[in-house]
Amino acid sequence: MKRSVRKLGLGVLALAILGAGVSWSAAAGEDAMVKVFVSWQGVGNTFQTGAKQATFVGALMGPVYTETERGPVHTATMVCPVMVAIGLEDAVQRGTGHCTFTQLDGAEIYADISCTGISLVGCAGELKLIGGTKRFEGVSGGGHVTIRSDFRQITQSKPGVAKEEGTGSLFVQELRYKLP
Image: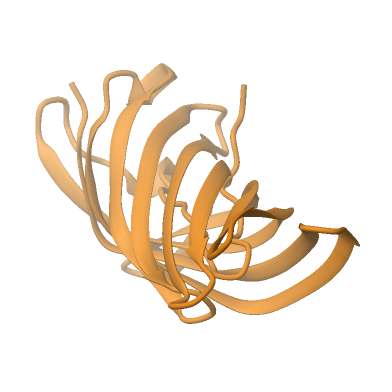
């Protein structure tokens, strides 16, 4: 089952990562590092979950680019379901997500993301690789993730519920990984 990372309700939580493919060339048992960028689109709902709190539940999806010596290369597609708690008075957001990065050859990488930040500004945290399929079976590693939102459209659907759509970016400057 593929998963997606979603955008955060009154804040932004877009988690994601990993592109692999041709540029992921570590030998078995060897530590390696890649630079990853995701241009995501998100959709979901934000619910009033307390007097001073809202919770966003949704998904982020988009193409994954891996930096190579010749520039960025499209290497995967990311899908991440996410949940973000948003403080309505201080705009502090805390989010988690579980992502699947499907490589162009069908191999998958699974990752967990957690981050904190300020609604409408961004979110920073950690991305942890938790496994994969095919050539990425047993992959481990992770890195610091930065998630930004550049567009949001919010539509009130029912009292206490808002539908959200948005776009943004996810960046992992140094994604360290090891293949078994």
